[in-house]
Length: 455
Image (cartoon, helix red, strand yellow):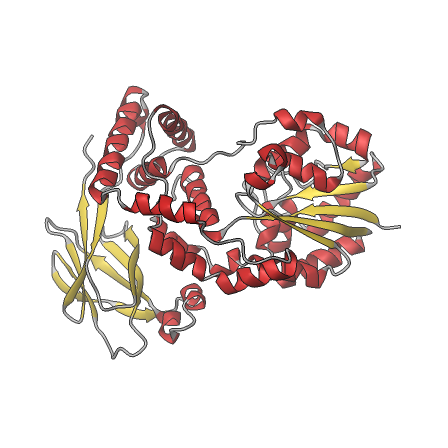
């Protein structure tokens, strides 16, 4: 008889760390009282089981080599023999990254080892809130992450990653016999506002200690501190240890000081971003929740974000600068400043353009000749004629290679066929005293200002 398995697939930033930490800490009670094994096999650096989806996708874990999924499942069965559980519970938000073909591979492999997927639990979060939270997480956790928010949501995070209806549909197609349990990640909907209590209720498990468990197991920096940390990532080559020290200092500032900025979107940008998922969300709620689309802005939220829009840009920039200076003082007083290497300070001023989209997202130094490589995305409107892209540096005007493949951007902008080849690149750019300027058909669309950071 096949051993039943419960799978918690995320998604990212829906309380998964808190759930996993609680399950890990209550492994013995789950096994002894409820017959549910939360295995050690498959755990990597945290408390979840990312090794299973990583092995399916061929992703190398933070430490060690890629693990073969069959070897991993054999180790799991060896662990099962020591406990004889009624069910196995695996939890990892990395499961939400699996494509349909990879889900099929996962099914074939677990069935080969005598496992039967009984339940698939998936928490989903409104897309605008999710992408802001994911961005804050990326800046907080990754020492080299320096993308601005607009570049991140437009290029790095594809629409498909937040298409929850397709996500659930793929798992249901591959595991039609399993019970798919989608839950909206909203504390107002949870018992006592506690996602752990909600998760345990799905399992039919009652562990009283869950009521007192701290939910913020993986808190995010505030929007303001995220903007500051992104700038620190951009300007310093921090060690991971010093990166964490600064993150913790910013957490303290968030606690001690007011936080005026609570959004990366303008209200209109937020509305337009959610509208990209409107059709999918309507289908999601109709088919999985038997209700109208709940992933919409409430009147209260609209009023709140209207007020956020009223905050002058100058005030935001001043708040970022003031907190940034406090971080520099902390770095000096704690000895971090003396240990770290500075990057030049880079700012990009974008000017009005007739292009449908334009962003610079590559600015690298060629270590062999000391010159720069500049790249990005430039998308003409569908009906635009042939355009020329040039860069003016300290040596003069230079041609830019334009029309390079940009498949991910093309997937996002399917309504414009030119998006598939919108990437541009130019090398041997020389830095001088004046800004580097970018022109489209003779009209300046951006200037890049490079200065040394002041200590």
